[in-house]
Each structure stands twice: as C-alpha cells, then as structure tokens.
Image (cartoon, rainbow, N blue to C red; front, top):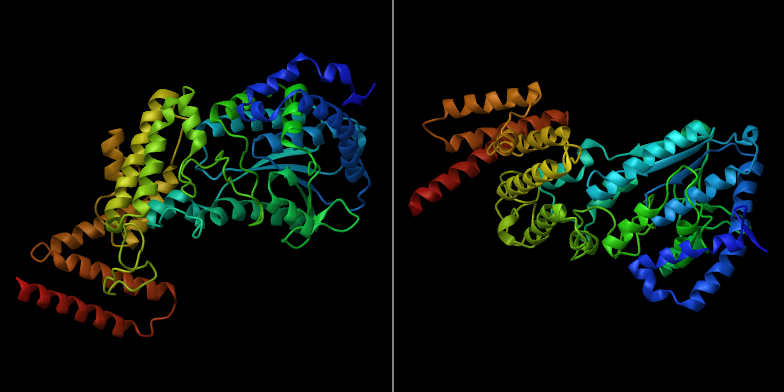
Length: 488
C-alpha cells in the first residue's frame, strides 16, 4: 500500500477529500475518473517532491539561504507546507540552512485577505519557533513615495492599464527585490522558492523552460546570484486542492478558511509573489489588489459581496470610480507632470488627474475606511497616516493648496489630523501669501509657481537658466491677463 507523508493511502483518500468539491471551480472539472486519477498521481508525486526538497536542502554545499515566496494563496501555501513537512523528516541538528518566508503587502490588498494572511503569518512564526525550524517570517511593503495612494491621489497618476501598469514594479517587484538583494549581499547567493506551476499558463511554462539550468533543479533569475526553485512545477490545480484538503498544515489549524475564501470569491487563482516581469500578475483570478483597474470587473470582490461580505461594497464603488475617471477627459490635466508649469494646455495630452478629482478620490477613500472601521473594527486601514502626509506635501509641491488633506480628514472623522511641522509651515506660508495678495488673488498662483521653479532648480543644484524661466513665466502670465482683459 502506498504511503504519503507517513500516512497510508487509504487514510489519504478518506471522505474529507470530497470537501474539495466546495471549491466552485473544481466542481466542473472534477468527476469520478479525475478523482481516482488525482489520487494515484499524487501518491507517486509527493514522496518524490519531498525527497527532492530534502536532497536540495542537505546536499547543496553552498550555504545560500532559501527565500519562500508566500502570498497566502493555495499554491504558495502548498509549497510552504511541503517544504515544512520535508524538513520535519530530517534531524534537527542538520537544519542549518536559513529559510525566509517573505510576504509582500502592496498596502492595497483585499482587506479580507489581509486579515487572513496576518493571522497565518503570526501562526507561522510562532510554530516555527516552537518546533525549532530555521524559519523566519518577513513582510515587505513599498516605499512611501511608491505607494498606490501617494501616486494616484498625490501625484495624480492615472489608474493602471495593461499598457501603463506602473503599479507592479513599485508595489510588488521593488519591495521583494530589495529583500532578496539584502540576503544575497549577506550570503553571496540565494535560492527563491516559488509555488509556480507549468499548468498556470503557457507563458509561465515557456518562462520556466527558458530560465532552467540543464540537468539541475534550479533555474536562473534575472537578479545576479539568485536562483529559482519551483518544486511544484508539475502539480495540477486539482492536485493542489486535494493535498490541502487532506493534509493539515504543520503550523497548526486547517485550510478550511482558505477554501472558504476561494469559494466565496468564486475564483480559481491567486496573486503569486511577483519577483520579476515574467511572473504572472493576478490575471483573471483577481485575488489581489482591490484597486486594480487592469481588468474591467473585479469578480472576486463581487463574489465576496454576493456571499455576505457586503461591507466591501464601498471599496467596489471607489474602484469603479477610479476606473471611470481614467477615461474622462474633464478629469485629466492637459499637460504632463514633467512639463513646465507655464506650458499651454494641449487637448491631445492626457496628463494626471486634476486636483478636483484627486480630492474626490481621497474623500471617497476616507469615507469608505470610516464606514468599514465602524462595522469591522479600527484595524481595517485603507490608507496610512504617513501616506496622508505625503499626499499633502505632494499637493503643495503641485501648487494645490485647496482643499487640504487635513480638512477632508477632519470633515469625515470629526477630528483633527496631526500633520508634521514642515507641513504646518507650508500652510502658514500659504496663508501669509494669500493675506498679502488679498487685493490681487491671481498673484498667489503666480508666486507659488515661481517659487516652485526656484525650488526645483535648487534641488537640482543647477540654477542656470532660472532667470530666463522666471521671466518667461511672467511674460506668460501677463499675456494671459491681457488676453482675458480684451475678451472681457
């Protein structure tokens, strides 16, 4: 009788396996023949996969650490579980290779998924310590200037599209890359373990084939001295669910909540840890960033709402608003951010969102956050205090002095927002300028724009041409004033 993970095959194919059918996408693909074939194949694959992992862990002479990409989805969960159970089978004194579990948080993940992952990561670290595993848990996040809200609301970046997907690199690739490079600098090399499978897509299969090292388990990564190991490359989706529903996680608990999330979201995929541009993004699965506008509909959010999580509806409304305004001519500037402040508007130029739309986005975001916190608790945070401060600073740099972030926040939360001293200083300077120019309010914007020109030149340590730019700005201002006077 075959044995899988130390258990007899009869136990492995017990009645609990039928819980797989609760996953809606599996229902249509599973039949009695598939069921029997999956059992047989898995009984042969698992011992081989675990033996391969043990061999790679013990007999790789290079002490390079392992970095396991964990997203909380089914594939990365199975990967982590198989590795963990393989390590349990070797003597504790031989577990000398460090293993880092890295989970990237874009800060705009589905709040329901975030809550689930947070509980899982806490349990992982606690169990690893108790069991003496050489495992530590790490969370990566984008830098403040790279976060979604600082770019979309602060700078007015249009919502991402397939042709302008500015979010992937800033929110996913860069944070994880920095962590990997840090470990490489410490050890010289690193092996990245991913739950990617050839069945996911033809593009993924071709990418895995293209980067593989002939005759070896590892394949090259685009980062120097980094290698990728994908132990589950030949596992099918049905086999993933079979394994998770029959084998409890070694860190405790069961996979029932994970199964429920997939069932309620009505999706058969999840967002993998993205380490380069060849890694598939969320694609059609949409089990990732709730603000994503690369797809026309967020089916996972719709599925959660349909299955009782109606508190998510404000997020869907904001996400749809962001999607619609991207194609609204009146919601976009007629010059680009990189263009000079005195450049004439161009109807053919679709620039950043207008200050008015940015303020509307922030208002809807804070209203959604307050509504969700009132029903789900204060831990449900959609935007951080640091992001609010960064947005206000960006608005000031863009000569957007009204409305103010603090005013919007105070109106919604009925409390004052604590801003750093340099923000308060800018606020006081703006009030002073408006008082001085009270008789000629149009001069306020002119002076602010000229100050920005001077400040930018100072930051570049190059004041050459500053006088000409200031004179040109004055000429532009006077020309418009004369034109408006004539038409009046």
